Length: 174
Image 1 (spheres, rainbow, N blue to C red):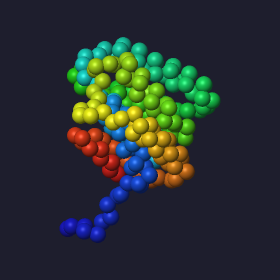
Image 2: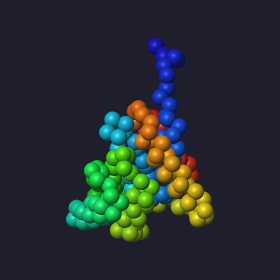
Image 3: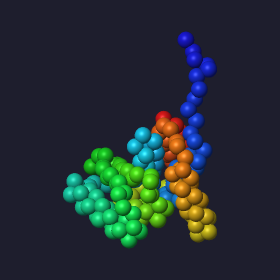
Image 4: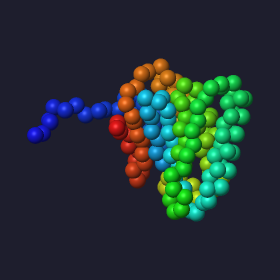
C-alpha cells in the first residue's frame, strides 16, 4: 500500500551546486538540466514576444557560428552543441544543450550574452531586487568553474534539474 522505506533520489551535492551556481550567475537562464546518460547540460532561456521561425533560425545559426569560432580560438575540438526552440508565439523556450566534457564558464557566459544581445527586452531575466555586486559574481564564476571541473571527474547518475522558484533556486533529481 504505502512504501515508507522507498529511498528518495537525492541529487549529488557537487552537481546540485553546479546547477544552482549557473542559475545564480546567469539570471537569464530559467532552468538548467544535467542528464548523465548523454552527459549533456541543457540551459533553457524564456522569451516573451512574437517571433518567426526565421528569427529563431537566424539566432541558431548565429550561435552555432559564434560557438564554433569560440571553440576554434580555445582549441576545443569535438564539442557537441544542440539548439532548439519550444513554441513560437507568446512565451517560448530556447534550449541549448552542451556536452560537459569541454564546457567552460567562459562558454556559458558567451551563450547567455548571445541570447541577451539577440533577444534584448524579450529575454525574461530574474533580476528583481538588488543586483549582486561584481566581486560576488566573480567569486561565483570561479566557484562555477571549480564545479565544472569536479563534475568531469565524478560519475553522476540520473537526471538533475535546477529551476527558479520566485527568489530561490531549487535543484532536484528526476
